[in-house]
Every structure is written in structure tokens, then in C-alpha cells.
Image 1 (cartoon, rainbow, N blue to C red):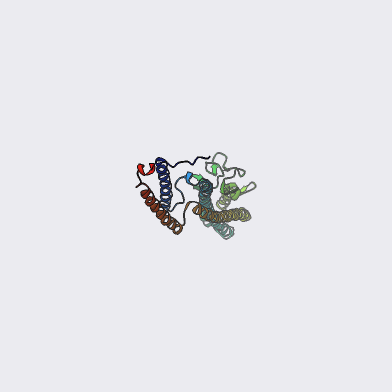
Image 2: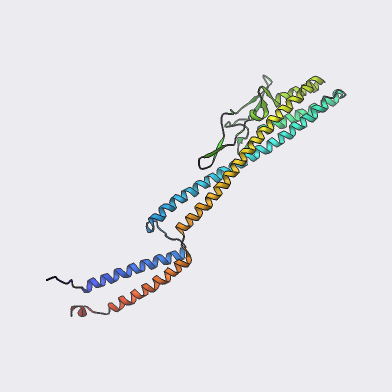
Length: 301
């Protein structure tokens, strides 16, 4: 003969209290979701969603790092482009002055006045070549010294910055760009550089040397082609960086939307659940209160 388990007063009381706590816990979670708009407040409440959210958040944080690198790259490239544009204008002015100075009808006084302008342009180009951005030479590669210096002992111009040392920026997942260009790459061609050419041009003007003046014209034109080619290369880099920025913006929207789905609740659904669980909890309270009206004597009968 099988025995029938007897429900005790204490056991029934504990069961009722446990169910009340469970009902209150569900209601408390719903209240929290409505109040905060979050699907969970502690990772332990939803380990699967919280784990995925952490991974997605890491992706968003990484994109933030890319955004900073992109902003720095565009600023660096903008400074370089502006300075090269100024240098192009200076080269054009040199060509104009040299053409004017090559005219044999010019007097020594006129040529000396042109020489003074050439010397000033040379100083302007030197300042452009030694431009800095955030304390770093724009045209110095990875170096920290002035890219262009004049050695008074040997009367020669020296270029710092190795073209093989690239200043790279990581602008996207597995994507980096070279934002560097050295002074030698844009102000020199082979063994010829614009500063030496301008020195020779100034000397020819001072010496009233028409042949020497004319010899400078094709050299300036050739070096200007090198300068504009460098500017075009930087323009291509700007396009790459801007495309990376566009891709990153699209990825950020995608990740942000996914993060929102993982971490936030649908407020309308949450309010409906809150109302339902509130009614259920109130009902559980009523049933438990009614059951608790029975005394221990009632259970013993």
C-alpha cells in the first residue's frame, strides 16, 4: 500500500512564499526594464545577450579609434595639400620672374630687383618645406628635425627624412594608409633641388648672366611637375581615407543598431509585460493571504 505524502502547514507556507518571491522577481525585472529602457542591468540576467553585446561594443570602440586616426590623417593631409598649393604658386612666380629676368633688355638694377624677389621666394619655400603639424614636420617622414636645412660650410642644401620611412595610419579593419611625403620627394628630382636652382638663379641675376637665367627655366618647370605629382598622390590618399570614413560610418550604424536590439527593450512590450506581471503578482498576494487565514489547527484536523 503506497503512502500519500501529507502537506504540512510549514511546507505550504514555504511554497507560497517561494512563489511570491518568484512573482515579485519577475515584476521587479519588468519594472526595471520600463524604468531604464534596458533589457538587463546585470550580465547575469542574460548571459547570451550580454556576451554578444560586449563583442559588438568592442567593435564600436575600435571604430572610434579608426575615426580618430581618420580625423588626424585628414588634418595632416589638409596641411600638406595647402602647403604644396602655396609652393606651386611660388614656382609659378619664379617662372614668371625668371622669364622676365631672361630678357636681355633688363638693366642690372632691374635684374637685381628680381633677384631679391627670388631670394624671398626661396625663403618662403624653405618655410613651407619645414612646416609642422602638432609639432611633427609635415614633410619630414618619421624624423623630428627640419626636413630642409642649409649647410653654410659647404653651401649646400640638405634634406632629412627617408622616403622609405612611412608615416602610416590605421583607418579601418586591416586597412592602413601612408600619409607621409618627404621634402626630397616633392622639392627635388635626382640630384637637382629647387633651393639649389634658386641659388643659381639668384647668382645669375646678380651677375647679369642671361644664359644662366634661361638655364633655370626648364629646371623649375621639371621640379614643378614633381611637386604637382606629389600633390596628386596625396589627393589619392585623401580619397582613400574619406572612403574608409564612409565605410566605418556605415559599420557604426549597423553595430549601434545591433547593440540597441541587444541592450534595449521595446517599451510598449515592456509596459504590457509589466501590467500583466503586476496583475499576476497581486493575484498571488490575494491567494496567499487567503490561504494564510487558515490556522495550524485547521491543518491538523
